[in-house]
Image (tube, rainbow, N blue to C red; front, side, top):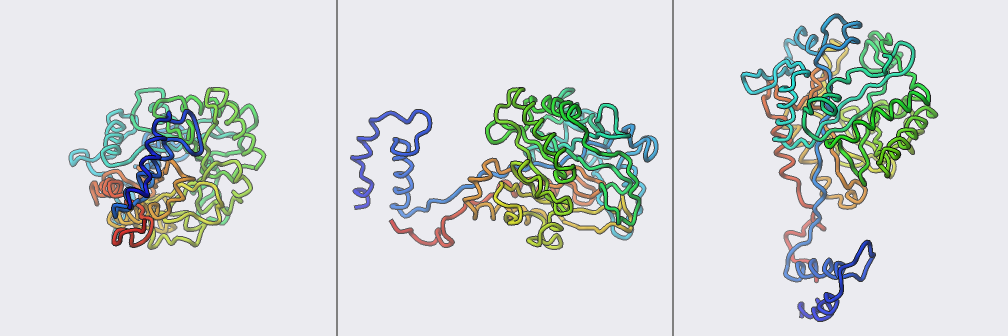
Length: 430
């Protein structure tokens, strides 16, 4: 009886037809097969389950850790974030520090060394990290560099130089001004808000220069593209520029990218953190194709999570509307080396980090409709090497390789989404 319900004779007659050429909504051979196979599986007592797109873990990457003219000028010759980490007295609650090279780690590296970047890529690939998101710094205004660029050396080496780290990558425009508090702007700060590098977002000529510079990266074989060959480009604070300038730059970027051969334009992603509401980013919402959950600052924007217990996204944020939302996680946030007593440490040990990833990936599986909006399923982790914020996947003296092992373990255990809660325990009706 079950066999008869499948109507094999009708299927056999249809199979004599050719496969559909191009797109066809229904009544092709492939449509018959997609109905036959699940029906046969269920008729035999099996379960048809949803397999969400595998999350592509992208780690945010801080391209400093080598001397730059701006840091020499503002903080002293050869200053890097290692300077703060090495000199900070962290007793009685120690900070994580890099695992020594002799123990298999990367040590207190200089990112200009090709072998360091080569090993970073190898570690990432070996542990399930799909790629890096390099922070990109471009300033306009009085006091900005003549060529607009700051800390460009490492992304440029990856794209136009020695090719390391040889791994998929994209850029995130860290577009806020630099201040002595290293956070871009609260006038009520208890530490110094003196502006070191201003940001006024320039004019049409600046936008053209910026867009042409970015397109050079977009053409690289390792540059991450999504949704129809669209280069991925993140903006840290989309609501920070005046709306007219944000719109002007992004419209320019889209036009320049299309002229360069990216006919579908650029996939623009707006970062969502504690600044999202302060900047009134919703005014510029139509300029972005998607949003990205930036942990743990996300919890300051929405009451849907609590950084004291949560460390990764488990659902979309309703306030962000219907646009695709890329989820994320964080491996800690502790700025004591930078801010001393003004810091508010958020500690995420490796076991909690791994469990958060597993819960997040499990939540993806329980929301099959989400895959229709987020086909590439990018998953952003804060961070690869933010040592000044203790957000690191790199090997540490305290936990060695445990954060990387947590990523590898979780990405190998992405669950299958069952169509009903007890599907595995009973035979579904035919």
